[in-house]
View 1 (tube, helix red, strand yellow):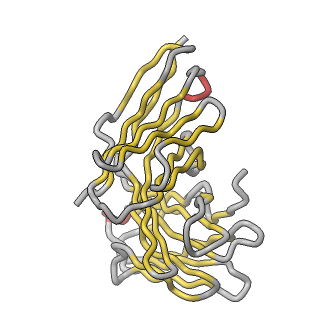
View 2: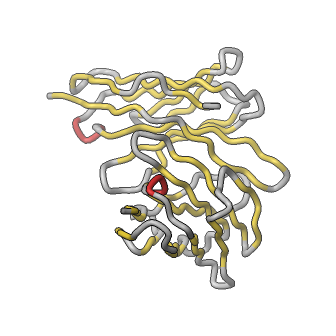
Length: 113
Length: 114
């Protein structure tokens, strides 16, 4: 158990809809990362937050947004969903914003129909 | 642009033998490298890391080797066990200011056979 909690585990929704994925980092970790894994692909970095502030951005679509709250949990919002957004979305946390291993949750599997 | 490449999608090794997983990178700014293991329906689990100031790091049955001139790293598992069967991801990072992000390869599926 990594200590990172993601909810929900599975999500099925229709095109055009909006969903929110939630992540609680490990106790004491200030940094949260979001990754997307599409079928047979590696993990693509979306965005990083550190203690409530955005620190790094990857190939995150404009339809996607994220935030980290004062209690350090994070939410990833996906809107105007398309079939191609179907993927596994992982959250990870680490104790620093710099070099330290990331600890991943078990992911949310999003299916857009 | 795939900055971290794992060219072998799969590898099969007999129990007790050595497993060698390879990874190449193109970005010379990367200076911290990690290996993750992933079982189905679970998130990736951190295995071992190495910084660019070293060329080898060992942790039990797992050793990571880094060849900076070749921009290549490898993970050795000795001896391989059936429980090692999983997908292994190589990842690389560079520090930009106070932020870092991991760039992952596409993974190598390791099967350890009896």
